[in-house]
Length: 173
Image (cartoon, rainbow, N blue to C red; front, side):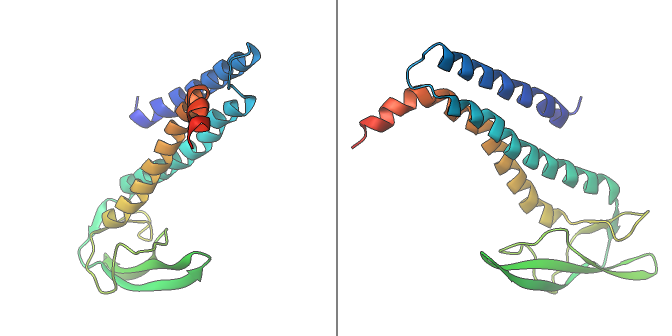
């Protein structure tokens, strides 16, 4: 079984078990245990599944895009202003067979991991040359995926420790 499949099955079961334990502790009258704490493991699954989805999507593109484009470059960066500043979407130019393609990235970045005119390692799909995989770009996406999965794993433990953390936090000046 692939590692991600194990976690996709195992972690939700753990979160549901932790939720049950917390609700039992609350019903048994445990000091500082609140039913709101039981929401944290369920809420953490949202972060976890978004991160795992990002990792799975990246793996799918890596499996499909197998042919290296020897002349791939960053043609230009589409720039747009968002609520949190300027984001850039790389647009790549490469040749697949005898046909030249100009394809936009799946993601936008701030800061952008590539620059206009830069030669990049780009893989494309033999069935659909517009499906691309750029390893330099994927590092940023996988970093975000790991962060989201990490938040999804850490949240339930904070909720589990809440009865011991609450008196400590209340004692701070």
